[in-house]
Length: 398
Image (tube, rainbow, N blue to C red; front, side, top):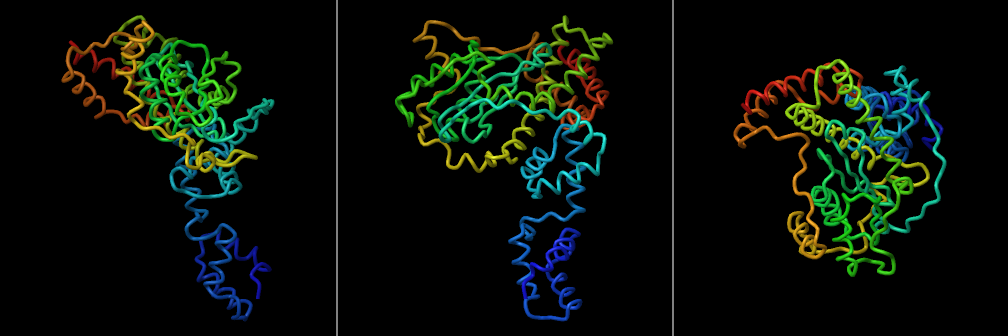
């Protein structure tokens, strides 16, 4: 007997958390037939429908996981990104189920997402395979508070392959924490695309030196264009701003407006940058994991689309660390790159004082909790934390 005619009954009970064996017993008891109603058949049917034990998350657990995720991400994660965020944590559920739970658990957030929904005009774009184009760009929405994000995304799979947060944009940090790890992990891209900023000079220098190792040597090793033409990654920042930067910016602007902090003071600048970099890096990392695990309509999931990475692999020996690459750049180009990236003035005279200050602050505040509060429009915790950090820093730096 086919189980398809009982699909509604089986699905409803499976979604409510009933085990396959119990469903088989109920079917046998209700319909009086034994053939075709075995636990094995029910389990196989459920697996084919995406309701298998390995892939299935019962409703009650899903509601709990989504409620927890809302606290961690705030209001801007809709069904697609929330599904990706949950998948990155090992919780598997369909977009439809996640969407229903989001709508039920927090109607105000759901209404806000609907009101703010927008359609972007498509821009013609072509990347033939993973490793064709690597887009790298910086985000300076929090630059006045000493925070700059940099991300790298593969044009074909749309997988974010590297990211970093720093006080001020810096060639060596961007190379060391974004480009170099991406190439070591996935291989060498045929072409790197950036804007016309000076902060990417070291990346372009190394990319050109490695040009002979690329898969397609006919293409230019890099291309510099205005930011407005680097569409693939520029549009990513809209998502990052909503989920990370705007809540933190609101909290800090409030403190400036109320004269609780003064960014003319070097210690205040240093502390503001230090704390905001740490918290926003956590938010950016969460976003990257969710993005890479979510489904892009008409395309697929970035983590799966990236396959085995770029066709051209390269040995680590060909990728010098940042300081050595900067020395090589200076020798061949004749220009020195900025080595330090500090916002304000580092007030600590020694590492022991720094460690003591960090330890005392950590005993009072958890950066992850501060982020969760901020993205849910509760700015008091992060504001109190910053004022406390400034006081602690002054005490240990004296």
